[in-house]
Length: 327
Image (cartoon, rainbow, N blue to C red; front, side):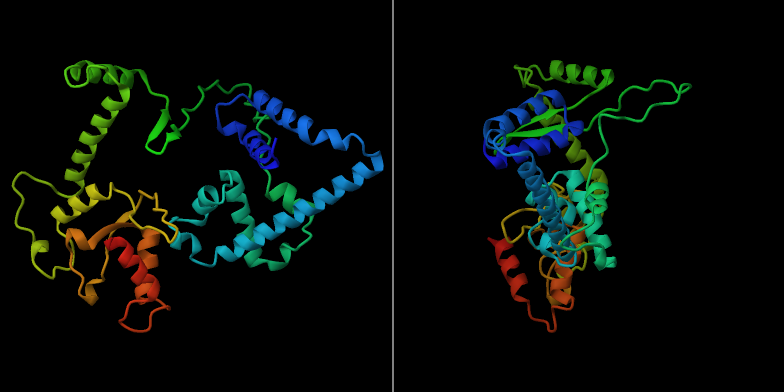
């Protein structure tokens, strides 16, 4: 077994409390990889040699951890994650760097502490930094409820999405009895349109209707709308009609595309962004308005008007982004 595969297996074992996999099965897989590739040569070492190597590996691990924390502390002061299309450093560490959620969260917290207290992280950090700040609680030892505390049902886990192919995903979630009845009723009523009764097709149609209804409520869609001021040339703000069109086109998601081609996945707190700023002649039309999450909207505003911008000319980085959006 390749060491990288073994490392990923170990990460999966560390995260077994967040998934539905059997932890014992993960341990068996981990042990199989160790026995096949690693334990065999180690069995020929003496006790003294083995102890020396263990201490050396632990020291190297601590040094690597300190280096990672230091690099994250520096990344936290820059806009690298925003430039590459990620709404936060946490999402960047999780999705781009491949850290698990607890690894990303804890390392970022330690990195920010290190920015406030630089001497707390060195190339040879104390064991408490690694063992207390960068570890997870033992999932095998849940807190014991009080004797008089009633036994509560297990909380419903969030939906798990597993990619199967570039355009196909497996969705697993827990629903209540009423939701199940609604699903069955919808399948019966759509029997003429979806004879197979495919759950995915029914869900897709239901979500389409829901999104249209939400767009109408969110952006003031009425049977007899009054004349919108936003339709006039040179309007400062997009009209409700433009907002609905942009929201549906961008699927309610930040449309910022990073330098690596990654599109931001943020759907919360999205705002309407002028591709060309209004003060530079930009108009509030469907072609000139895009959705941005709050962080990327602020980021592009700083590219135009922040410290990097000293004149009314576009900065080079913004020119590249504008060309990318128009193609």
